[in-house]
Each structure stands twice: as structure tokens, then as C-alpha cells.
Length: 448
Ligand code: SF4
Image (tube, rainbow, N blue to C red; front, top):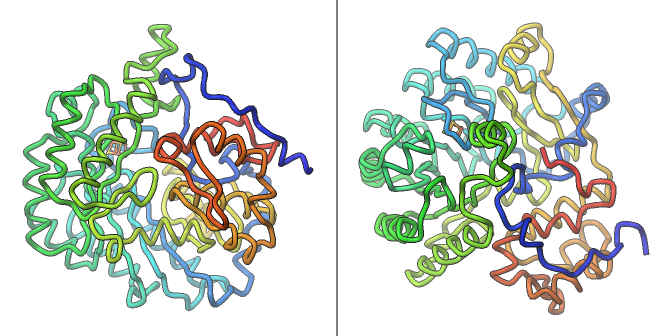
């Protein structure tokens, strides 16, 4: 038995840990970001000189860090005060960054399989800004082999003209940050949009034929109630989106809500506890399943699993490369993690001086890549042991025997032949359970 197989205690969470306290729970990557370091940036840059594996897909992530206002639960680096010239300068830096990277041996000549515009609020950009950015991007990285181009949007920024332009750019998935349908809840959580803007944006987006429209909801916003959550489910169902994503509210340390908690000396956030949030997501998933949808991960349901895919997520969780573009962006190339500078000024200064703006990095080991792919793919609800045997020469059923026994004993999962799967209860709290599969040196790390 290696240290990494030490059995975690097979017990449920304590009542205190079921309250929503401050911190990150959501597992977005592995090893945790706190293990990526500045010291690893210089050696990590060597990855750009390597020869790429021709079978490994490439994705692009472009970060737009601007928003109309800062939501109280937001933990991203966003700017609400930049003028048109500053935004233009930022976008020019992004293109310059792409030019530098496109010239590198590891990237040169490769065409992206998927492209993701995230934020912040990509739809905050004007039509001329979006058109110019994407034209210049396509010159460097043609989109003709891209099977998915995803675009995050805040409903209140979407005029019909802008939606028409976004559709014409070649966006395949429009992801609408609805979060809630109640105006009071939207307001007290600091959201910029209101319910009328959701209806207007959705209806026009639907009418112009986006291949996929996704709706984002958050279970557990401040002042959410059972009655309102049921209304949110009904309204989301009535829109018949191609897919629905639901996040359970967490309160990281850099949110406005946490700052208010700290000022008031409170340890518990003013939002529903974890069992209630899990119940709300479970109820939403059940309602969508009753309407013919399929649960495809801990956070998503889709109307037609044969045609509606999340290529960005699935490729990234299966070893694809992701080129990080723009301030604070995360990427991975040939097993090397990197993040760009998280502040806009140093980011732009580095790019303007002809340097790759990576701020921290980490080259994963074979074992870390195995653990990463295991835990991330477990968020889909089911993994095949054979996949890991073929890919890594490691059988997760034996490597993780104590963890899987604990999962089974607690009723959160099971092992059946080749299949390792989570029950619905397990899926609803998968981010908490995944920490037990971390290598010993990564457990109990602050996950930021
Ligand atoms: S719209 Fe998204 S990125 Fe912008 S402030 Fe709100 S949560 Fe943060």
C-alpha cells in the first residue's frame, strides 16, 4: 500500500461542516491551484518548444474580465470601471499574446477543437469589439475544425443586435447566466440583470437558432426559499433550454458576502446549508428528468445527450491541451499547468514587452495526471476502470480501494465490474468527496 491509498475515515460530514462556511469547495482542477508556483514558470515555458502529440486536441480559453457590476458572491477578478480605450488595450494585448503563442513550436499550425469565451462577462463587449477580436483570433487559429465555441453571457448585456452578431461569429453554445428568476433575489445578490431581460434575451436567442443554449442557475443565493426555488425550476423548464447547469452556492474568501461576514464576526454565510442546497439541485434534476432530460454530470442536465455535448469540459478532463489567453486564465499544455497574471496591468505590461504572461505553473507527474483525470471525470457520475488502465497503467479499483470501499459503505457510490459510479446522493456532494482521492500532500490544502 502506498501512502496515497491510505483509507479515509468512512464517515459523513459533521453537522457544523454542513453549514455554508467561507471557502472553496468546488474542485475545478488538480493539483489544487495553491500548489502551482512562480518558481515553476521558467521551466514550464520549455513546454512551448516541444513537439505536440498530433492526436491531442487543442482548446482556447479567452478571458473577458469586465462586468457591469460585481455580484456579491463573485470570486473572479473582474473590472467594472474600464472605459472603451482600456478595453481596446486589453483586447489588443490578448491578440498580441495569441500571436506570440501561435509562433511557438508546440502551438504553431494547430487548429482548435474547442474555444471558450469566459469571464467576467464576454457579452459585455460591444459588437465591433467582439467582431474585431474574433476576426483576429481566427486569422491565427482558424475555427474550421472547432466543434464547439462556447460563450458566456449576462442577459442584461444582450440586445437583439448583439445576439445576432454573436450568432454570426460562429458561437455554438450560448451560456446564459440566469442564476435566479426572482428580481428581489437577483438584486440583493448584486446581479446586474433582472427577469425581464432573461425572457427577452432567451426568446431572441432561441429564435435565431443557436445550436445550444445553456442556462446557469445557482442553488442557495441569499434569501433563496423553497417556494422560490420551485418557481425557478418551473421557469427554467418552461424555457426548454438545451442544457441546464446548476451550481451550489459557495462563499470564497474574496467575495463581498465573506467580507460582510467577517465584519460582523460570523462564521456561517447567510445562505442555505449544504443539505438544503443539495436537495434543491436534486429536486431540479428530478423535475428535468421527468421532462425527458438526462443528468450528465454533478452540475448539468441536457435535453438530448446524443447531440448536446460539453466538449470543453469533456476534452479538458480527458487530457486535451488548453491555451490560456487573457488575464488570470488557466491552461494546461502537455501536462503542464499554468495561469496568466491575475491583474490586468502586469498582464498587459508583460505581453507588451513580448513576454508570455504566465504567473504560476506546475508540471504534473504521471501520478498527478492519473488522479486529476480520475477525480474530474468522477464528476460525470461514472468512470470506467479500463480507461485508466489503458491510459495510465493504473487500475483505480486497486489504487483507490480504501476510498472506494468508504464511498460504497456510505451509500455514495459503488464499484460494479469495470464501472465506478456515484449514487445521486454522492453526485450531489462529489466536490466534498473528491478530496479523499487527492494525494496525501494535497489533502487539506486551501483549494484556491
Ligand atoms: S457576472 Fe459573473 S464574473 Fe461578473 S461579477 Fe457576476 S459572478 Fe462575477
